[in-house]
Amino acid sequence: MKNTGKLRGKTLFITGASRGIGKAIALKAARDGANIVIAAKTAQPHSKLEGTIYTAADEIERAGGRALPCIVDVRDEKQVLQAVEAAVATFGGIDIVVNNASAISLTGTLDTDIKRYDLMQNINTRGTFLVSKSCLPYLLKSDNPHILNLSPPLNLNPRWFANHTAYTIAKYGMSMCVLGMSEEFRSLGVAVNALWPRTTIHTAAVEMLNGPEGALYSRKPEIMADAAYAIICRDATDYTGNFFIDDEVLADIGVKDLIQYACYPENIHLLSTDIFLDETEPKAKL
View (cartoon, rainbow, N blue to C red):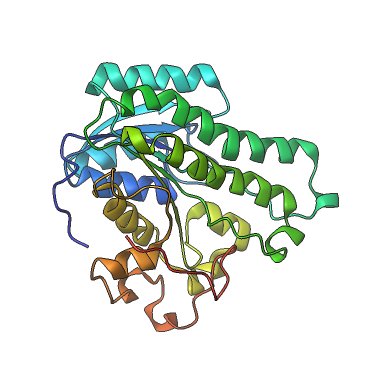
């Protein structure tokens, strides 16, 4: 999907943007000439995962954007507030927030220790709330403010709770922030939406969980980046409170051929559907 230039000069505050989907969204916006705040923990190279906030910053600037790498653990209020202040001091404001940082453990109740439970709650739900709350005073000054949470539709089918109750609660907390904040800030013109992938998305972090063979039946992070771009370029007063699915967003703007996003195009009809999606899921229109 081609860039339109609509994000030129806009400032995006993206959590977890040092790699994976967060970085893909950052690079897409950078090609418009956007300012990117890379709010992530990885300042030193990880033993198993490529990329730091500094290597991501280099890529963003090579793509045409301006980058501000900030060491941010979204569980730490002080670090979040410092990054927000640095963003405003550097770029003059914040226009778009992408809550991408997330922790996952697809474990049953007896196999989920409380430390892991707290980690997921504090990064996914609390972190999303904290980052959104901290950025909102500046979003309210923007001419087209958006918050985009990478979280699923609120599907109460018990099957999505039975095998990983703790993770579902934490991830749905992000979606409940969409439900509440979109209505709370509707009259003030701040769009708050969710975006979720139709299929599994292959990233280095997912490969650690599923192994390299997961790529065979997955799509690339770029499909999420293109869908996110389409959402945040829209008029914030017209598009809020939605739970978007990546390929539906792209289909609605005329991107019909999705083979380009498959890690292995020959497996285009064998892609693994992501969790939280039922076959009867209603389509959200952009």
